[in-house]
Length: 295
Image 1 (cartoon, rainbow, N blue to C red):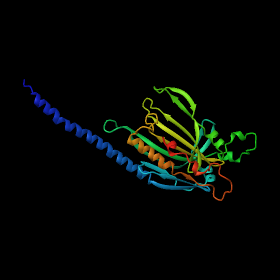
Image 2 (image 1 turned 135 degrees about the vertical axis):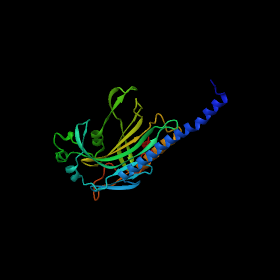
Image 3 (image 1 turned 120 degrees about the horizontal axis):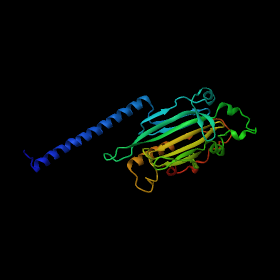
Image 4 (image 1 turned 90 degrees about the horizontal axis):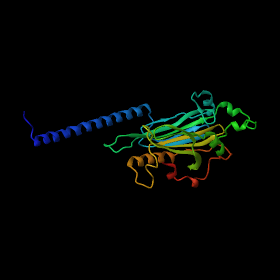
């Protein structure tokens, strides 16, 4: 029986390493090509390029920027007549906290995919997403006599107090193993974006079991007695892991810049021809610093 010498064995091992690396490179290249193709068809199916968009809602205008670097986007290209949509819109959602049925119409939504690991050691992904929707109270609510003894049941989204009360939410808590610990109310604060007040819910979700960590910010602002706009922002990281006073990975910087560009672009005009003051409009000198708005 013949035995290979040590030099021959080392030569065989060293010769096989390039093939292994090439195989890994091929696999990564195939993944990248697949992702590029997927993103291409996402853009084909959702042909909304980055840029500035304006939408009319009754006698107001809502404008927002879709940043560069997004994967897919949706945009309501029609001006919205809320009275018409109250009769025709079919999507109804139940607000569990106060048992009201409301109707939602999407305005603008988009997201980007972030590689949250360090290639080639970790190839995990998360999504930075931003979505806005117009929420309409049921048509019957607008016909209720608000001076009646049932007034407390009906919202008036023109006041900050009522908006906060009627849109407050809760979050389910979990332990490290994914077991439910019960629900708790999400804290609220008030922020100002381009001279307009928004009630904000902010919470961070730690990674549990196979669910990744994320930061979720939900903003609310009223646009009429019976309607409000909700803005939902999700970032695939938490401040506890990537504090702002420390050096952050490049993908975290890109995610936060993506959110900042979109948030600071939001503008909602005052009602056309209205002589009544808009409760949510304040001086732009009171704008909340972007560092507070972005995770």
